[in-house]
Length: 53
Figure 1 (tube, rainbow, N blue to C red):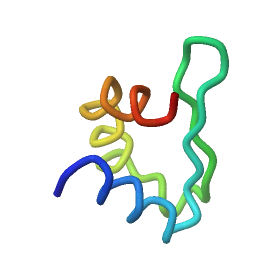
Figure 2 (figure 1 turned 60 degrees about the vertical axis):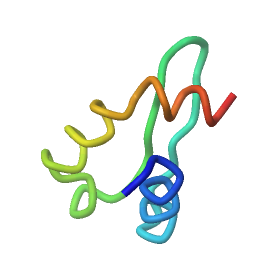
Figure 3 (figure 1 turned 90 degrees about the vertical axis):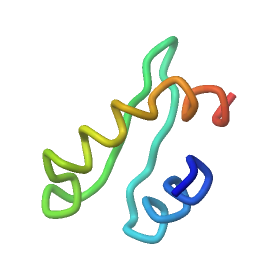
């Protein structure tokens, strides 16, 4: 899965990613934001930030 597909999947799960200053932030339900998912977000962080800018 590429980063665009990953972001689309997050959107479908009502997870919002956004940039606040220089930091990547996220919003979503605790049930969706599992430790595994948060680790995936961290792994793709540079690409996500680049796409969101």
